[in-house]
Image (cartoon, rainbow, N blue to C red; front, side, top):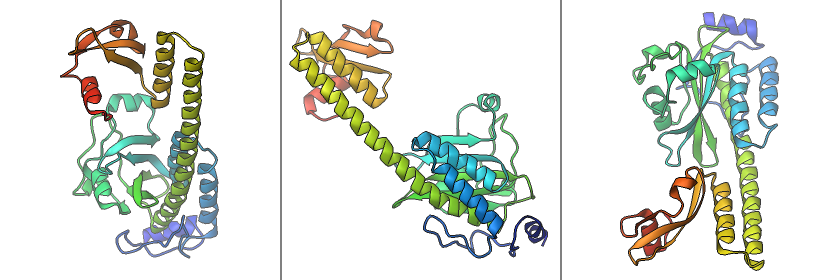
Amino acid sequence: ARSTALLGENDDDPVPSGTCRDRHVSTEWGHPSAHVGPRSLRSLLDAVLTIGSDLDLHATLQRITEAAVTLVDARYGALGVLDEDGTALAEFITVGVDDETHHSIGALPKGLGLLGSLITDASTRRLADLREDPDRAGFPPNHPPMVSFLGVPIRTRDRVFGNLYLTDKTSAEAFTDIDEELVQALAGAAAVAIDNARLYEETQRRQATLAAFRQVAQALLEGGRRDEVLGEIARRAADLAGADLAAIVLPGRGDDELEIALVVGYGEDELAGVAFDRATSRSGQVLATGHPV
């Protein structure tokens, strides 16, 4: 009843309180139910316009997290991006935690405890007090205290891309049914924005690859010296892969030896010209099988 009274003060259409396990929202990118009033819908529209304003993927993920926090008056928010297997967190974007606190906490979470249960279950979860949840694994040292919790999966096409985590609603003791519906709708819009950003990123990568091919081909056609051509290949490969270091490895003086003929990037001075055993190395494995590792 108290939750309903709060909703009556803050929104147009109060709704009886319920749980995320017995209420679901039908959504394309998100059509909230009739419970959501015009004021909340305007806030949702503002959030959708915000997250779609940038085609850079990381910037898009940051905007999604910020928009979710603002939409439901959360003190803290995070977006956990799943790894390729969909079983752990590969990236964790946060809002509300300053750099000093981040540094004192240490490593970002990998998806255990309550966060892990959302990865496994891939469904919305809303808790009045996350400290009482049986899946909770506890906070690491120096982590800010958090109580109320709302977790919503973001699905792109046929798989879960990640989860939105929101904690500590500032305008009420706990997140409400309407908060849940709004964030579910936002997650649907977020999926579209993520797909668009990924498509843009893929287009940029293909253009960069074609440019790299042209530069290497030009170096070959101009009859450049071996080290110049290999250097161009290594630099372009490092750029395309976002790598700290790229090396060109060639057969050494003996049949059982490989040598780093050219290297660019971090540690290049120490590695240039280094010889190593062909049979026990990754490079030797690649040469022997003809397959990338």
